[in-house]
Length: 382
Image 1: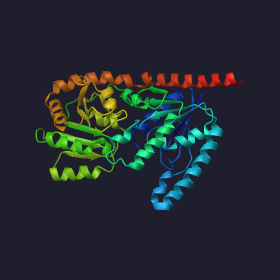
Image 2: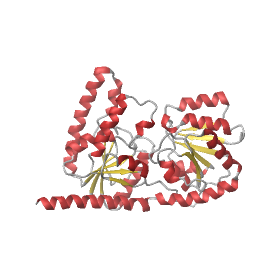
Image 3: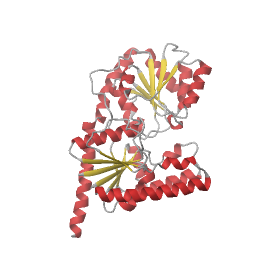
Image 4: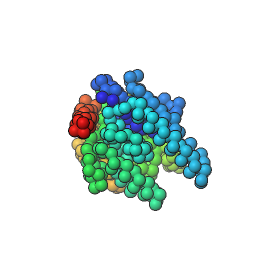
């Protein structure tokens, strides 16, 4: 079977990039003919290793260049880039003749739908159905853009949500919705964190959606009680300056690190993982960290943490957005090494449900049944 994955680029360390890479590597090892089509890869190397048998095609559109301009000039450039993209996309799809197209980037879906013909389109919901309602900067253009995206999603043959909560949102306007959790890059060694290092870890892009102000407020409550503990933050983004300024003004034990290609080692050198997001379509770092033996603490935000953390068993789920309760739970784990050890064991066990061997058969069943349905429709028309 020939499957095309379509995304803007595999150019930075991130959850979506890791999941796509792992999924394609798994599929190609199962004998599938896998293609990766990007629009803006350019000269960037993929952040995660890809099997050499994967066909990587970059259309070279460079949509981001439109933002070098403003006003009518930007609009004109955007129109030209869209025309270039649609022409190249149509040619590429016709040349490959895939059995299935898997859409990852929502901005490209309208064009995919126009040129795919009867090829089934499966869309992965990595952004959540109603993600913009959690954005403090929601405006009329953003709302209109959301409506535009949802129309494209609902024209797909199948939408795959990562959680039941997101799936229920999609089902309000779309018919064919299925739930398959992300596969997770599970720690596959016999090495785990010792939970004795006085280090708390935060991993994620430093953006508004990750609740960085909450994180800093929590640490401001925790540090006076535990001055010998440190908070290690791994990530890049616009909120980095906020963290740096807070660190200076509060003399906080916070250390900012670049995203790591060996994040598992970073987990193993820590004792607790915290997540303070406003929302999470899944929350990949949670089961990743759990597989290394880390107890986790997160707000019970829409929708991922609720599906992953079993409150009081492998971590703590905190009501949104109770900073004081979050800080108290963090202090409890810092003070109680026996509780950390108990949660560490449970975390390792629960993380196993997200490993590729358990999740990927669900994807294969979906691809095979979707292909078979297409073949059945074709045979009926002959």
